[in-house]
Image (cartoon, rainbow over all chains, first blue to last red):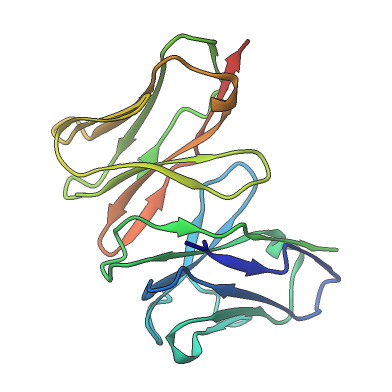
Length: 115
Length: 109
């Protein structure tokens, strides 16, 4: 069974530029998560989707971050404009349940560096 | 009090010994508990989940949960150098999972 796929794996941009990350979850997993992980910290939830619906985006900085999950499968996370503090690893995860509290499986992540 | 607390380490354990990783959490109504392993530069990998008080064993790994003390632990028996990684404790709060900062484990050959 293929795991969660993310691209790109690495991205270096200058501040104020836009950037987008893509995620394809495990087949059959209806719930998709975007996390941000800073160095030395645990992952922090940005947004959770159940199928096409964003059911928890309370931690998403909506002034510059946006996300979508068209057709309830692939998802993209966008930052515009990027700031130096956005440098982090952006992780996508998926799960079969809908509570947000079940086992989650992570993709390889995208390491973003903003200069 | 932080929601999920772990000692950041590093915890150094000789090869072949038992590594004991501990985690405390603040929300008494939490029902789901997870341990993830994260190698340097890699993403978290689920090791175990536990939902009931007591022990749950899977190979060399044993998760222990004590809801009364709000404490969850992970024991790794016969530690191997390949077990050297950061171990993240995760606990549910409402409809999300909260991660601790992780404990760095170093297995000494």
